[in-house]
Image (cartoon, rainbow, N blue to C red; front, top):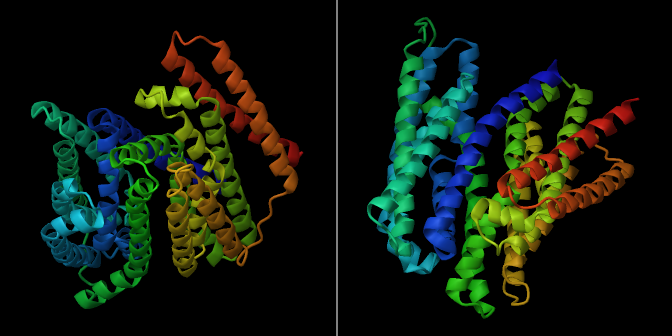
Length: 502
């Protein structure tokens, strides 16, 4: 029953995240057509700045609020839940406004001296109001997760992404935007409008569910200072981890165009290469990682419960299982991308020049997917310190690799893919080392050999089908081959498990 419950919750969350991911993917396709490769590259180097300040205004807040809310809910203490939300919303509103104003009035400095592209100044100013709405929405999302109403923010997120796509298309078509600077700015204005709509809907939903709370006046009200302290105790370490990691990611993103230019590549061409790799190829190869993220979310509370009950058998069995599934999903993705690189570029972005980018990005998928789930495992085991240290080490390693590899003209943007492979491999092994300090995890060498042989076989099958079947029905053909690729790996894993159990 536990197994069924785990995968049922994972499936529900995956379907929700998958819908959101599809909308994001559609959004990236629209952007690639409206912005072009250079505009998408410009969009891509502003987004890490936005993510960085999002971490600063609300990093760790969702988890902090959800944990506190869950504890209070178990005691039917809705009086202090309401007070928690008031304190959190008020304090985070003040902090986010301060950060937003700081960013707005320093947009020129950020665009000129940090990004080193003056065309981004209006985009940076456009995201400032969004920082406020994101911070307030984080508080409300934490509340819904805490009272086990996770579907509410999921539905709202889906609606917000759909609205954002509509607004972007409407603004670009209505004002007939063609110039890169104004078009990218319009996209970030749409982002801000979407975050505003998301916050309003979350707040309306919160007020609705709050009206159903039965307040027990006999319960003692906690002090505002104590509530704020409890919230910050959980949020600050997670915020520090996310913020420092985001800083290093931002530096990595900003350093790539400069290193490509230093290698003798024209700046516009460098932006185009970044747009093709990070804005298109990575979106294709890392789209299925949505499943891993959903699994990790469901995994954390289950591991925490098993650990507290000292049920190490269930703990080890679940960890081994999710790592195996993550690796197989990455392996399936890699094989599909290696077999159909040209078709995938044409299918999703209508471009015939993405194949080499997709191939180099796909090679890291198996280890990247497995590494991603290990962070969720460490979180479930209560190893926040290890997460912080490992994340910093990996980010620094990736930064160094990007600086060296992308500065070589013979490697150029492909250094991004090589850096991903090495950094994620390092991440997987050092995370696994920390996991093994709590429980015993073992992967037989024979399994690796079997999965390798399966991968070669399935690659040949997909390649043959792709070459034999005509392109008359291009979309149906490639969708069927992609579905077949994942299905082959799924049934091979089921057959292997049945063989081992018998």
